[in-house]
Image (cartoon, rainbow, N blue to C red; front, side, top):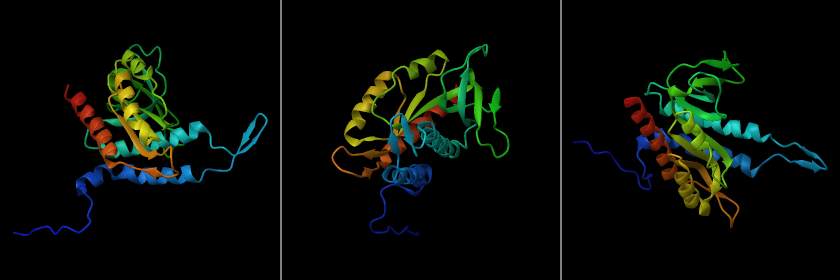
Length: 221
């Protein structure tokens, strides 16, 4: 019987787990680099020049998480998009949804053709399995957002942050759960006491597993 050799100092997680969640670690490293080396911003009365727009920074985060989730959920009969939910009679739409996990298909898409600059979709709310709200720096929890999604019939809303302080994570997790979020994920942690970052594979794994299980349950209904 052949035995698999164990390398000294090998990581505790298994190979399959690395394939499933490793991209979160890669993304964390990439985003930490920009956080450490931001562009110089010139501030004058009424002006801020050289700053990356918050919308652009936020969209970069949500887009990269969309790519990860598309791969992670590729075995499921779903699509992962950025856009708005439409109510039953398509008379109104939801607040912007950074990430929508939904049945295949859409009502309309804006500039989503070949090699698009933007791929923004309008999705019937009844076809949505879950929503992910993304934040660059998480310091407080938006308690209204899960309620708004439930008004459109979506019961599973997740919260994902680029970063938050390590000391605040457990409290933010409690607050997000109380507000109705299905789970909280975070790419990396900052520290109140020192310059630098840390990551926690278990946080990535918990978020990914929670999303995957949520979609599986929704598809089984």
